[in-house]
Image (cartoon, rainbow, N blue to C red; front, side):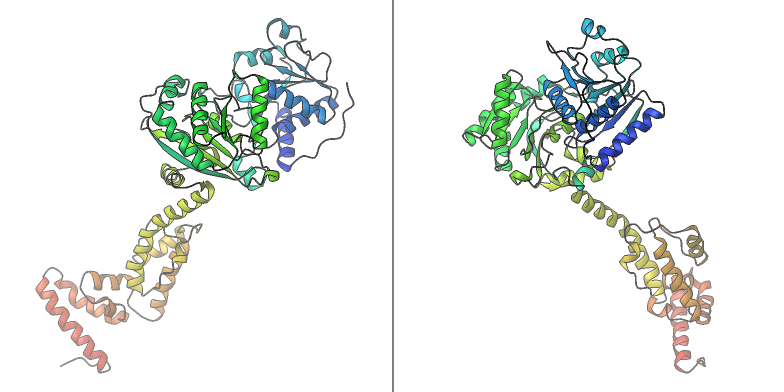
Length: 539
């Protein structure tokens, strides 16, 4: 085994992830999971964990399902001085401290040729695939090894959970957290609605049926609308377009080329490794602007200059959508990239719940109304989703506070002569306390939903001030103005004794409108005369 060199410089969240994994293993978990967004260094984290494993005299196995992932892992491991080798096809891991194996290769006799105690740690890259039988067979073979999964998308489109493999999620770092910290590019989202009815498309394995969706998305009118919107909206941004099928990718690339000659090409699983490498190099260098593909570059593809992701395949899978967006989140200061534009092409549907950039960036904690309003904002122009969500929540909070503010102005403001300050209803204020609620009730005031304790305190203070000035109480003013018909401006100014006399003389006439009106006129005239003459009543 090669000598292990010093540990690399890690970001704070990477150190936290490593510490969390160690804690879960010490707590007795055999298998645990790390969730890190694409572009935040999942490979760096598990390479450091592998390095620490080797430093203790043990061996580790890294599993991946794509050649690109195997090569990336090998490069990161060797960069930190770990003796690593690939087990794939005719390549053998041999006695390397860390074996980086292709899941497709490590099976049958090839798998059983390894001793069951060959590895102390099994690391599964892109661990959302770990429920597949091929992975399970490997994990079962090395039954004494601990298992670490790393992924950006712990949820699966087919609805299968990862619980049968992993007992815990040791650490999660959110996409929004990484963007706010400056580790990933900010995202601007734009939703482009196509004239497309998706309700006829069935669901297969948790997502829209690929064959039926492919037919709809390759209709000439849809291709024309998609390509025109893509070319117009992407501008000069290096762009990856994700399509439903290989045929769809080629049609879309051809249509973009027709609109903007030389701008686009398609790659697929049928392309040679050299053709794929050339497309990636040309995209990074700006020799081609748009590369269309069908699920070819959802994992294991890094091209930091990419500044636009066009998702031309509506999906119900949050995992798939997240993987596609992740191809463009890496920063690229050298190319002047300031943000990532995500173009989300969608059709009309009442039956399917399609995933959008909102679900990837803002998560699942939104209300239906919040999601609807933010989604509407993305249908106009590219939107900063977090800023839009803050604005929407402020609007909804203001709408929720409006009835309470109106109540306070109409009831307490008018009846008590209280100047209602909107700051009494600002966001984040504590709701009315039980003590304040009881005090209000003693004054005949029932606190409405949404009343803040600060507003309640203002009402109580205004009521107490009236008591100190020997003025009519809130209940008196309300009864006189709303039931007895005494003008509000007058009722508010009456002293407690004056209000008592007015109420006493008029209360018995409430049931007779004419008698009440006549008595009110007389009583108020007497009151006016008494005030004018210093208290003498008219003879």
